[in-house]
Length: 350
Image 1 (cartoon, rainbow, N blue to C red):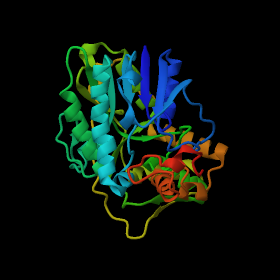
Image 2: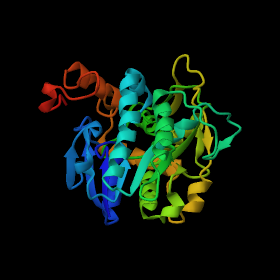
Image 3: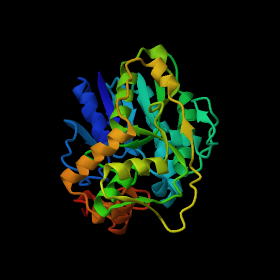
């Protein structure tokens, strides 16, 4: 099997390419290189890479692939709010266009990395399956909803899309994101002794380890077509919905001497939802998530000890995506549409 992975240089992509390669899949990565140098430990890229903006891929680039694993995106809410039009261009238009190009090139499967954030603001009394109503409240989540709807129209006997709605991801990666809730809480606890909560701690989040996400994609790649054709799957594990305060308590127990601390004026976060993962567990018997949040907190703590995570790392642009993008914009390396300028043809200002 030959698979193109977009966003191979990102947080999930850096793990995804290793998982697929270990499974004997011929992996080619494509990435625009925005986070080159944002390494946590040792980052090893795929053996074959295309340094390309996904907006520029054409049929020749996709010729000969059995599947596309599409991860590349403006990957969180603050980045989405920085330039909603650009977010729409990359996350929605380019994702649908890529599916169209893949279909014309004869690619049989298109695995789209969606998000449980499509459920947005929901009642905490509900546990949401894939049939639940969408309630996206950010540009990022809205783009995910639109891509699923538009790509579904392309599905036919020769082109099989699947939409994997990932829970909020956590865990160590060679391209770490420090702006994800579990990673952030553990990082602050280790570096400062404060388990620093930016909300009032009441919002619910479904949580999933980055390796379990990657194994879900691997299972879909190997699954019989009739099990996954034009289907959406929540990706996570039942029993792994947590209030943010509960995660903070796990962190404070793991990181000896740390204390829970709330941001001044912290209030409830409107993004609040619990998710059901029964569908993927029933449809894909090989999907066996092995991580719990408690295990992930311990893994992150060990990784932060090993790499000596510091407060300035957490507050800098190395692990915080919006800060890295802002730095590239201010340096002139990127233009307002997040495309490289002539200055961007050289080394980035790492």
